[in-house]
Length: 397
Image (cartoon, rainbow, N blue to C red; front, side, top):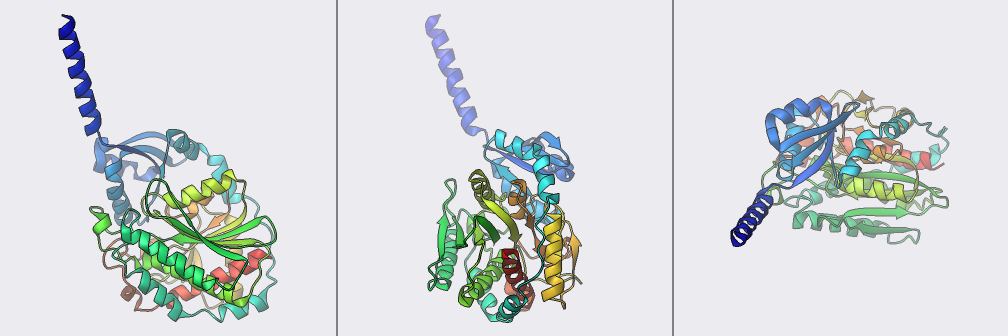
């Protein structure tokens, strides 16, 4: 009998081990509650809602369904990403229940800034080169893809680091670093121009690209608009600031985030770490897709998960320095880009976008996301580079 029990116990142990090995790995995500009926219908038992608070839901989802979810969020809801992936239940619950922090970040008093740097800004924005922006877009979109788990995704970020380093090589107050992530290969990249106070301004956009949802590491994903255009716009902003000899009072950080397309992973890690270090971040500008003019409006400020007063400040910059540019407001949904990572940590964040969400470039996340969709040039992105320069300089004072 004892031997029989031993064999039964051993058999059960083996079966349990096999079942555990066969069970799909799970991920925790937060997502807009308005998509829950869709996830229930499309993913069934692969996606289970755990809790919902103020329009945001916490789901447990099979890890191998994340790419499909990302694809469907773009196709069905016009959201790039549209969710955040979390490392633990505690972190997910904290994000879900931090409505107080989110509301504070949305409505917190933003410092009153009068526009005082007209001569400096006017000189800088006159130097913005469409040709330079186009060249960077073409270079980044020449990689097979910039997926966060592919070698070409790693190589592309190293190219960004090297190129940004060349732009600030003559300055002793600036540096470029790779921000390594422990759970995937693609790093984020951060360029810092040191100021003289503890205040920090952040201008960022994501460096990765995706296409489809199967075999993404081998897919052709040029990502010219999403988001080579944002990185190219940031690059031109860096070039002009660096060459001007401008010495900021506040530290200015430019960021190219890894792994945005799979749940804002790169920006979430950086924002969380900076919050833990009590970083005094006075403003965050997100540049995600800047070169496809799909609407009657040139620049569209996203109002959800952003800071209302900073959005208004950006509006004054547009009226002052780009009076020929038409602009307005729209919404993009929860987790639609990296600004949500900063907003979730209580920092004032804004996302000026290239069009209304309903008019966005529907070639993104496909092999058709090439610069030819923007007539082979970067006239639209030029407007965003001028805005970024005026933002950096006027927010610095």
